[in-house]
Length: 66
Image (cartoon, rainbow, N blue to C red):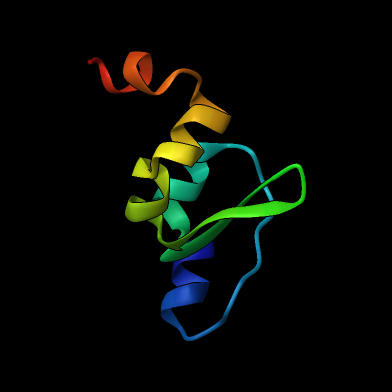
């Protein structure tokens, strides 16, 4: 439903920690860590940003399988 509303031109603000949801519905995202902006861009860019991976998904090397 959120994607359909957005496709109709409606801007939606979602505040969530569910990265799976964010990756499915967001075109652009801003990520905060303890109130400080650490990344901003498309959902794909943000979810791959090293600071986001470290802050929300754990150790970067473990999360990326390195």
